[in-house]
Image 1 (cartoon, rainbow, N blue to C red):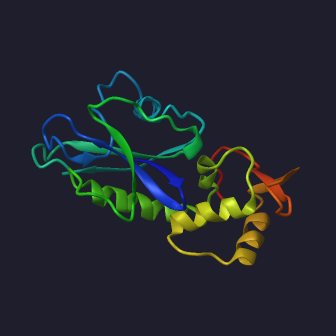
Image 2 (image 1 turned 90 degrees about the vertical axis):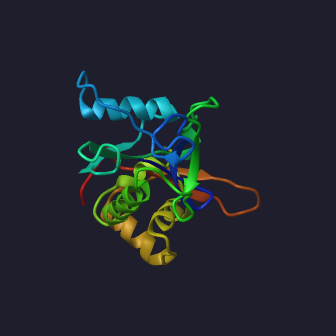
Length: 202
């Protein structure tokens, strides 16, 4: 499951299946594991194939079965990746066409993928409370309002600006860069960065 935030909404990458089963339906990107590489290596390779992105948050979330009615005993190992939208270059081509979809307005999906996505979104929301996972969704430097928009998109609700600022700075996961960003006639905005772009538990 590959997520990004674009225009204020949390989006997930889906592919239009070009072969049976469920040909023509939207589904999560994936593939069979042949045992010649690690599971994480296979997930990273698939991620690069679909988006071209490499500097991101990737984690194995859960293992499940029964997603494909034609293969009830098949096991699916589900990974989640968070990517900054500006770094993504979706794979081109008419077959197995990829596209971003708002998680709040998904089309009908194959293989009970809507349940998998709902579980992943719930886990990501929970992780915002005790990790720095949002680093995967932002460039190296950003403003606190930009960071807040990411949190709001994942949480699905508005957050109080003062409390958010206090929480982020108090947690020690972001720090000022010492630089300012000027935009038109507006007051220059202070830029921040994550203290590390590796997973951290608070």
